[in-house]
Length: 91
Image (tube, rainbow, N blue to C red):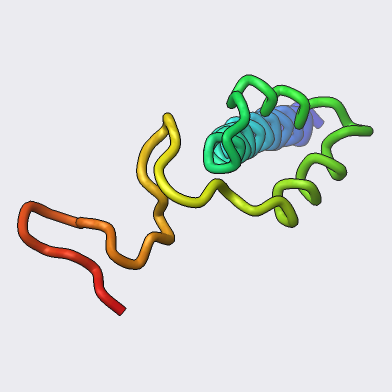
């Protein structure tokens, strides 16, 4: 009986570690997408609110990012952006 209890405890700890890692990953991805749209990355905390989570994710899927360079960096979809010193992406 003791062995089974310790197995469940180990499993529970692993589940919490994985859940924490997924939440951190989601916060990072949402904050990067918010930056791409021109919003403050601080709004990514709204992902932690269950009623707002789905609506925010849907909004970020639909809302287009800013065209051109914004204060967070160059547009990653710009077809003529420079990728190195002398290299340009041309399509």
